[in-house]
Image 1 (cartoon, rainbow, N blue to C red):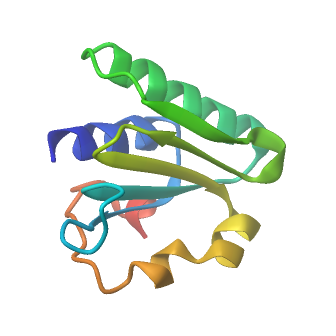
Image 2 (tube, rainbow, N blue to C red; image 1 turned 180 degrees about the horizontal axis):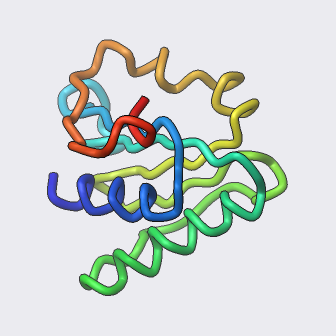
Length: 117
């Protein structure tokens, strides 16, 4: 889960809010973990996206693909074993992935309280 922790740290560096990670092994075949965070604005959403993508490239990990459009309020980076979601507040509430995966064990991210609330 080292990649999960690194992604969360990279997102926190860009002031992402409500960063949460779920261990979904055994619950789905799509990934081992999901990381979800919130951006307050479209520019911040772009900054988080680019910060995570570039920060992971620095350690030799490139996304398998990315999906979504910045203007839609939701983008993701698919790293095969970890899917990293970035939402605007309205989109996060609408899609409610936290509720959908609420039964999955949470991964402790050891971030400051504002990032993981």
